[in-house]
Picture: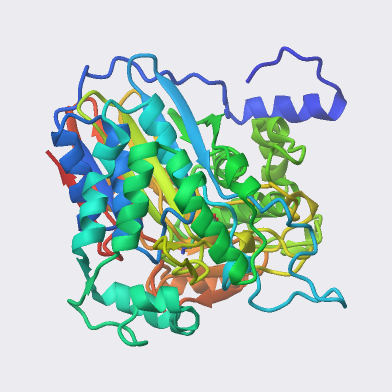
Length: 570
Ligand code: DON
């Protein structure tokens, strides 16, 4: 910790107490002397065809950033329920050579005609479905701009080359699998509502059979124009005209100016240390990095290895509760609201939160200062992790939000639009699709980015480099937390992606857990401490991760067994 600034009374006491607890949080970790190059390159993504697209581009001489473009674009084609050109995402990059680390923020923005009460009726009630389904739900897409930006500034191949595998997949089609069928069934009604969507994703109005080919010639053309003209191939010209006409005809509020004005933002990665690791993660408008920092700083003061199961879950849950409370109160688009990031990242702040944890009792969420809000998710949205042979790496989490986004394809473009507008808080205290509530910081405003939970992350230490992330709405951050805690115990990616998961997000005040994640004995013990539970019927998340172990100079890569993804190293 830097003690450069004058410390006053209580703050000093806290700092002294904190230093006595041995939580020296100074940035003491410098990833040192890694081997010059990893022995193999590696990709883990949520779909085998996307992993193959990335490998193809690496084999063609592309670097990790070109491969990230190829994987993103392929996912846009073969995982239409998760991400796409009509959505956005965060690409966390590390470039070897100048060691540049940054996040390409390609998050959607609210249309310029949006306003804080966009989804409320005359009596101030939230209009059900308006921020979820159809053209009104869509923010201005960021993914096309992000791909063009990465090709221009970080890749070594032309954009059109990196997009080639996706264009091929869109033209030739990909086979429907069980997961596609499940997602399409879930969103059947909204896909049936729009002819442009039904024609692509359904078979005569119904969920296609397994093995049926989904061909997307219009999307192939949109990708081709993007490849040929860069960002103008999407945000101007033919594609832009069709997007605007389609959205407006379907009752939406986009204008040409929205598309012309869209900009990605390069943001410094958020970094902090945990034990002997340096964590590199997503800054606002993601809530991921800040919440991870709070949770890990709190937990650094406890000896989790010595704790029994119930004790460990109790402490981790209490850390989650406090970080998600802060999320609800403080976090939003940093270009619009003042976020006290420095305070939230300060280990002394976390020490204060830690001091409020009782070991024998759950802290009811209602007893924590209530910002007038709350937050909750699955395996739509997508994540991939890439390491190339030079050691360049990418962690990217991309989304169109709900499965199949808004369900609306702008006619003639093949572009399925997102429903990321639902990530704003439509009204303080009213939960969104993930049960998340927000306050002022995440209210709708023209051009503003909705708060996200997407948490693409690097773990760096003297021993190696980890790259990880996952979809899962509000549970993303706690999944990445459990992965990091597992890494701290010396486990590798195969363990991070398959670990049983539990989650707490402040409100609702209960521990959610996957089938079998907690023993009956631990549940009894935690109940006695005052915790309440929601036993989930199914598993959640779809983590894609890799680890380059410097000592053994070996790369492990893993894809979550809950999904259909694939991990490859070669
Ligand atoms: O940005 C976010 O936080 C959400 N739109 C992510 C949604 C998500 O992960 C859905 N997957 N289950």
